Each structure stands twice: as structure tokens, then as C-alpha cells.
Image 1 (cartoon, helix red, strand yellow):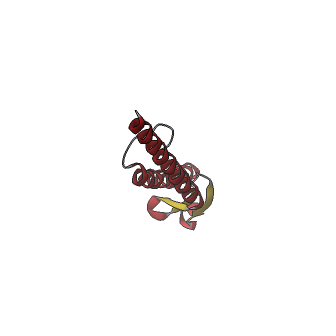
Image 2: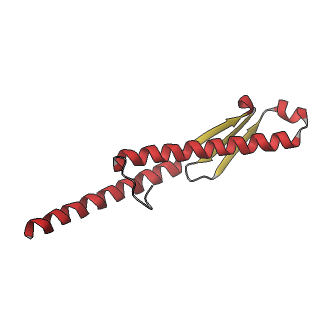
Image 3: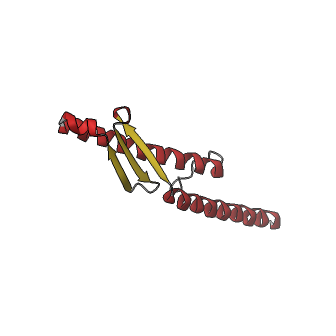
Length: 107
């Protein structure tokens, strides 16, 4: 039985180390920025890793068209692109730590 307790202690230690690494990666990603574009670069959006909108750049050509609905669609598409990039990057970084294990609540 003593060997089982030692194995469990080692497993708990590894789990704690993994959790600390994951927290560090989450903090690092939150500080990074991610770009998304739409309309062939007509709209560019920057979001932080924790999904805060940081900047929007709109080409004057889009404004000249005067199509408000198209501009709204381009902004939505660019924003969703940036958020997807941030989430994909976060998932890939977490996978490096977990080795592809699906740990509920930690990914």
C-alpha cells in the first residue's frame, strides 16, 4: 500500500505542476494581441488574448462605398477571425502542456 500512496503523491505533484504551467500560459496569452482581417484587408481588428477588442482599422475605400451593412459585416468577420486566432493559439499552447489530454475546465 505504501507504493500506492507514493504514486498518488507523485501524480498529484505532476497535476499541480501542469496546472501552474497552464495558468502561466493563460496569463501570457492574455497579454498577447491577435489580428483578424476581412474584405481582403479592408478591415483589420486587434484583440487581446483574453478577447478584449484593442483596435479597429478601416480602409478609407470601405468608408467611401457608403455601405453601412457591408462595413458592419466586415467588422464582425474581422473580429471573429481575431478571436478565433487567439483561441486556436491558446488551445495549441495548452495542448503542449497536457499532451492532448482533454481536461474539463482547464482548456
